[in-house]
Figure 1: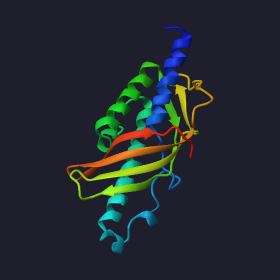
Figure 2: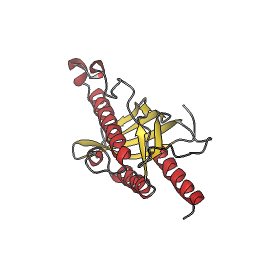
Figure 3: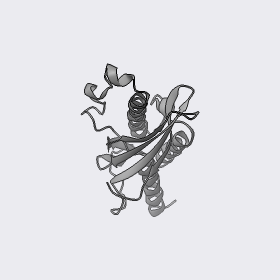
Length: 185
């Protein structure tokens, strides 16, 4: 494979990662929700409010695991499988394999601004949808060995809308699919 083909494959892998990814957590400086965002005792009696809080917590944990996995181009010890399932997990594993194959990792941390836009508790499995504004401008594709930045297309979106499908597996909420919308936020 020549140098141009390596760049193309690297850019394609990054595009997949960015499309999949959306990440980080924007509520606190460490990416965790502020304690005030947790439901109060009175709100916890509301099943919709509790489901929304649980879904957002899983989503934030999913992003923490992604950041950890993509920083080393490996899902090992990242916890990704605890939060992602089905298409979302398969997509992440595929992107991680592409990163590894090309000798790349992603350093830094994206920022997310998720909102639960739909919750259906009357179905089995229960389902939810998250709409997020993902900012990957501080999440950089670099060569693993040198830390040298990998060139990416200038026209790529670094802030985009993502739609995330979440559902229960047993009693646990899991991310099942992520889709990058081809529009800025």
